[in-house]
Image 1 (cartoon, helix red, strand yellow):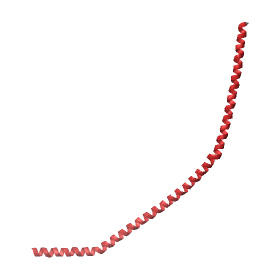
Image 2: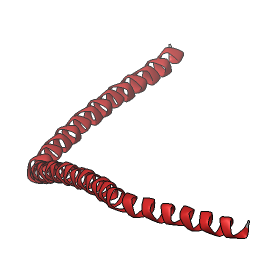
Image 3: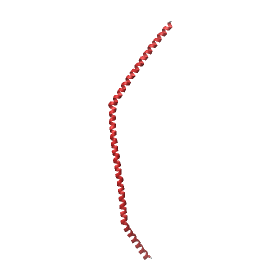
Image 4: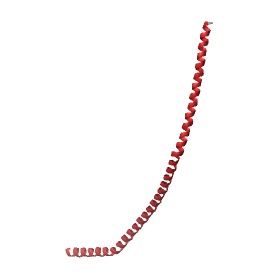
Length: 128
């Protein structure tokens, strides 16, 4: 019977240790839940006090940037159209000037060519 008493004592100690381990695990679980709930509340508070207002400001800035970029795009298109129209007008004006100069100088060029041919003809008939 002596051997069973020691065994029973050891089994009792092991049972007590198991109960203590269970209580420690339950305590750790409760502490973990409390830490989780506090962190969740802290994150919610942080989000409400800092992140949400910052996001509102960022969204407002992005809306302003969107409006400015739309205005810049519209103005760029307007300037592009104006430049193209001006270039077309300059090309048309250059064509008209070229045509008018050719028209007015063609008679003079014809007169000079005729005079040159006449002078060459006179000079070649004297030389012969």
